[in-house]
Length: 289
Image (cartoon, rainbow, N blue to C red; front, side, top):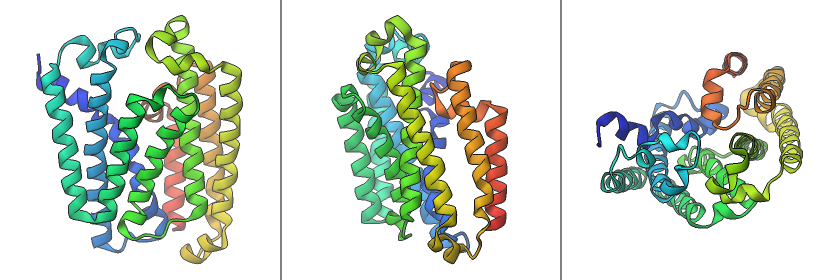
């Protein structure tokens, strides 16, 4: 029990890729030449990694019994009994404290955003995850706080179109995750995640379609925004839109035909089409900026 491999698995370092949202403001503000700003954003991302790991461990502690009914989550360290409860409590507290100390060192705004993230996730774990639709909005809010810590938290004015696009992207991924859970768990869904009994395939498909449409429209409008053209001195970001559309359509395909979508992080790292789309989008974006 409590071997290093299981402890590392418990804090889920693979999920830290989600904290890439912290760099959104830096990427689209043209602030890469400011080395001090770059380091500040990097440390803010580290603070969010520690905060998210603290929450992951806390969630596993609270959901341990329910996770035993899940076809995949039953193999996690706590449900499987390979990491003790006292060790998990220690890890959660250590990561949380480290996150808050680092955030306080960076700025009071970063500290307040990290505190808001922790409180939001505690409320989500204890109550809000059982409220249909609001549960996904809470997840989305967590991602929006990541964007805000990398913009408002470090003094970068955020683009309103980019914030709206980020909101819709995270809602899209959140509802797609619920749809995947509904497919994977089938008759045992209520035993694992109570809120799933309030969702249905038709409802989720409609919401996912609305969110996907919103992502494409808001990102396209961002690339053509006079503010964007003025900041980056280019109108060519519009040429990155097809890669965004393809990645979204591919994700929906994975959701319906390969039972993907249950873990956005793994889907993004495993599917060659999505990886190629992201790489092409990133290369073009960096080139134009």
